[in-house]
Length: 208
Image 1 (cartoon, rainbow, N blue to C red):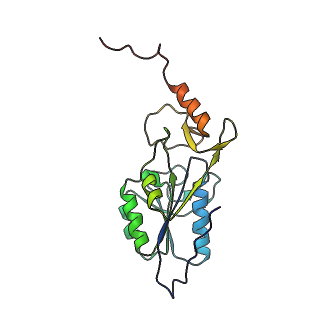
Image 2 (cartoon, one colour):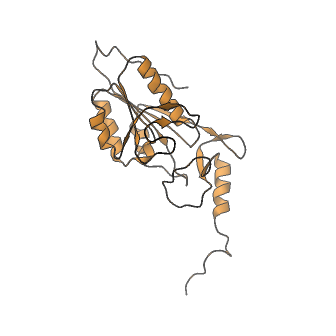
Image 3 (cartoon, rainbow, N blue to C red):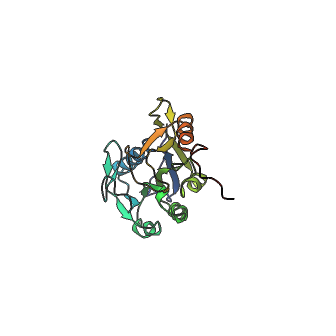
């Protein structure tokens, strides 16, 4: 369980910033947890700004929306550097789908935290091949707080930490939901990946 960091009285003490990362597979509740933390910050009358990559329009062009339909208004940005300008004067900055930004997101989060802002980033830690995804691994290394959430494997019901792609596409970025992805545990993910490998008979013959 994530314990909310203690936040001092921002009117009587120097502002202290830090980075929190919520990561995991698809359908693990990353965005839901992000929304929960941001909502609590707003209840505490903190100045909150939320951002998401402009390419993510699956549920809404502007709102950050979780799979269970929880939502919060956000500002879509094309590149991470835009966040620095738009987040001026904030106490808390939330960033959803962090894996879709380039590596500059790490420096942006560092600058925000150094300026006394609490930064909360949610994103996939692995892509559909089980490889580290975008800037999330570097953020995990630099964050003060890391929370890895899990889904339920659709094949066996165990804890799932992999996003298995059921669509035939080799693109690392492919926006989709249950029509394109399944949450799977390690054994079921490996089984599915092995099933996708061509048999010796199907492989093209080597040139002589």
